[in-house]
Length: 122
Image (cartoon, rainbow, N blue to C red; front, side, top):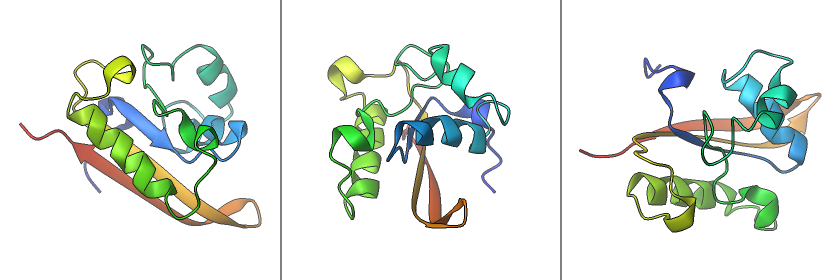
């Protein structure tokens, strides 16, 4: 809907309630082909200096997965990054950021999901 592509994003915060979730969301958001999330993450592509720095905040598990505060904590990190205020976690020249937040399970899929794109004001 935004007209933007995965390659346009400078960083991401994704719902990583488990280690696998980051791998899965890299595929679902189009950062790598389906089935290639593991090798993509293992290559360092999601590290701070990677192709798409992901969960620069440390991710949800590092925060104790604060249900209810999960989405806000992710958006806070992205805003901090886009303002250039992230210190040692700072992604250089970040202008576009994407957040994926989900919850609950129906079969093998998330019961609810939101994807938000933020842009640094110029």
